Length: 92
Image (cartoon, rainbow, N blue to C red; front, side, top):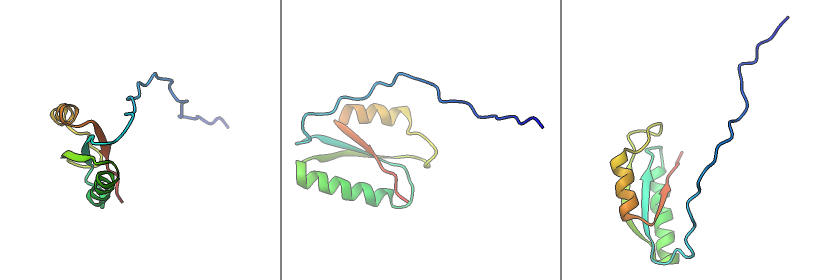
């Protein structure tokens, strides 16, 4: 009997990782709500904690159409312009 294995190995890719800020103090936070259950609650609590500990402020919140969709290019452009750091919520 011959078996066919349709899986393939991982593809090696170069990934450019964003530079970490030296400090979180006073940075503007962008939030991406992925619309999963509790994502908004998780992001709100995280934003509150970051505000208390580091003086961060929420610059804007972007909401995805659904968990499987990406945010549109206009939202990405706005996040880049108005936020120093972006967190995408997961929820569930």
